[in-house]
Image 1 (tube, helix red, strand yellow):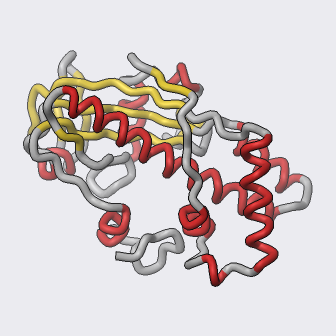
Image 2 (cartoon, rainbow, N blue to C red):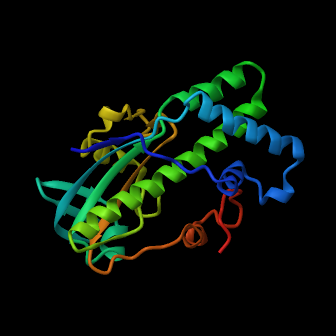
Length: 229
């Protein structure tokens, strides 16, 4: 079961601002802009990001309503997969994290009476996880191409039709412990800045942009982090 480390992440200002809940650079006060740039520099200097990915690719044995049966008598419960990826031949399971250092620094800022720094750094961490997800997709896309197939966009627990409790199953199917990722009793990932996903591999895989995904979300009218369609 492969593990990948030392993954370069791109923290673009626009994505950081979106994850901070700001609509655009022009809407951010100069002192906030300066603080974000300062925090971005500190993230790099203090090596607060330790991105890592654990993944495995399984052959699909059967798809039926609400579930996907994989090799080795494994099952993923997700009503989205049969409808979105009917042509899939394989399913990539991936878990990624940026590690615990940034999260600890966020807590330290809050405990030190600097909640603004903590909030902004937390947003930078969320942008880093988004960048890591993109790197996962690129890597799985390369794996799919080497098989003569395509890769779908990622589908994560918590999306409609994919219960958050399925994270228990996904983390058992990859070496998540090898990158320091576990689950709380409520199926919340630890470190918090982590993500899990499945990606279909096969012919005619469907993909979508972040804006299209946000447009389908039930929170699209109120979410401060949405990408406009």
